[in-house]
Image (cartoon, rainbow, N blue to C red; front, side):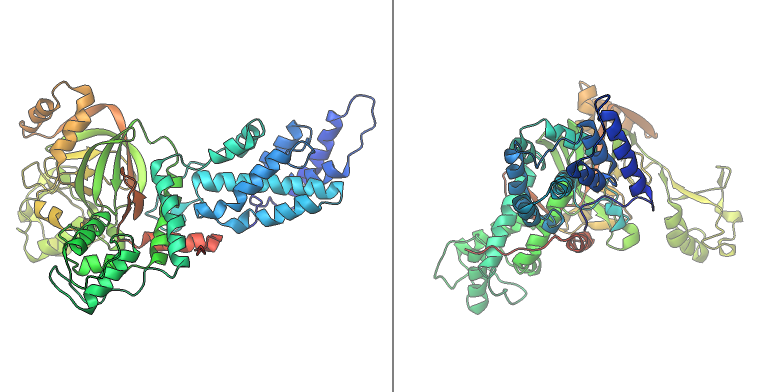
Length: 538
């Protein structure tokens, strides 16, 4: 991809260049004939299509940032940083560190220097934007459910701040300053060494291996776990205690029940290649850049791939529980976005979404008007009506004129509380009467909302800052049996994320399955931008 920003309309580059040259007359001392040096002319022309750079150089009277005699430290810091851009999983060709280095060494004219000055500034801004906010400008173009809005910085403010800073320190501070990002980068470099050494060896055959077994499959399991770093070198050919403990540790790192038995899910995780894991890590680093902004002193973090919700106070996890997310079919997948939780509704009414009403319940009512008796029928004026006078067979999905609602009850589809962060996707967190599904490892069963295993405890945590006795405050509303809204005195940011690779609080890398296939799409998009898998030698 070109380092330049999007091209202007025809003639606008020429018009901008002429305006820049005219502005030079203003900069000339009074009474002195205006002459434009080849350096300034070349630089002005090269940045004419970039409003931020045109303004930056105009404001500094086209004084060099990179190519002057006193700019050696800044040049060196930039070249060193760009040469290591691949460590961050960035498209190194976009910045062309080698080409810039050759240009600095071989510029033979003032015009060359002007063009090189512009190239260096464009490379700096491209790198700074990518490493701070992500390579992908609009994730929803990859998948509409990836509705994250990366935090783009102002380009003029960025290069102006850099021009006034110690260059190496400024460049080091650009990537996300989190333990998660640092851990992923460390894992990326380690995986590249693994790939360079040939990977983790043969995959493990079979469907299930258990303690006490022996034979070739157990030896394959032993060898692969050793190469993956889970097991010291051993000559044992038996599924012994050491091998069982290694399997348990791997299971914990992959969100599986740590029973020490290498069942189908565990063997699938073990047999994922180092290259596939590297793709997950690179996708995780990109997603971390999309959220490289203040997330809120207190915030709620849902990881769709991990099927968990956490309350974070600063960097400290103060609550975590399991969740159920949307089904894998595209129309029911839980989207990724951020919003503000403003209130919770205790004893909620379930207003059945129209898509569910006409696709799932209307066919039932056409077969049996008394089906789904827990749902009440309402007309367009909001009046509850009897089913007895309705011929449901007279309607289809487009003409069905009624709304279905489920009043508050223990069996309500939303359970006894829902947590609201109003958003265009009509997604929220809520209780559920279907508790047995929380025992599953992969919990993709909803229509898109997020069902919470411990909703009362979550409510207590969220109410604690505004109540001396949050349990009593919540229970008082609950015991009325009526729908009741409790407003959060301080709204809480909510971030619905999709992370298949991240560093946990201990620094260990966690991996999860790409249940919606979004990371595969993301890596393909990154690859089209020039991001490549690397294999480190030695």
